[in-house]
Length: 162
Image 1 (cartoon, rainbow, N blue to C red):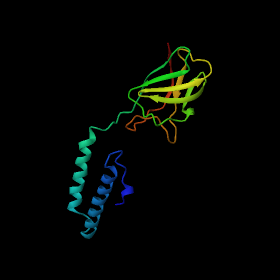
Image 2 (cartoon, helix red, strand yellow):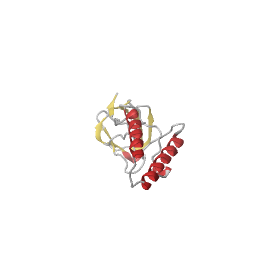
Image 3 (tube, rainbow, N blue to C red):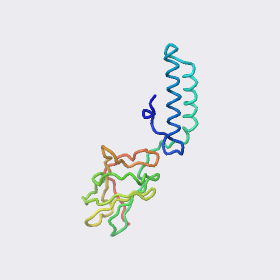
Image 4 (cartoon, helix red, strand yellow):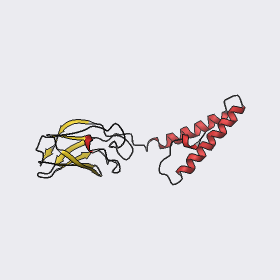
């Protein structure tokens, strides 16, 4: 087993060492099994170990995709503030073309502040009931929470201006 074929365990202090040791353990079982007809009781024990590890952390995983719960804009401001059900990863910003307003405005900036997704635009301010839509990019930089769950595309949805 080559270390690089295993996925990264993430940003753990001993992540690379953990990945390396797991690859070594798998390699040892592969070698032992090859010498003994292709299977190994050691493989069963290693499988049980990794399964127990996965079970122990299963409840800590974030599997819930974020959703937009509100779309607001302050009167006279050219920033739509969309509240999401959980914080989004501020390092991952999609292309400006992923957001569209109706009536059409030019999106100039997308930025994230905790669980608020901000979309700045130029032109006349939008009015109550005008809409915004998000089309998830086909490549990289898809809006997502800190657990990697993607924010789904949404069709033109009314904003509230107050």
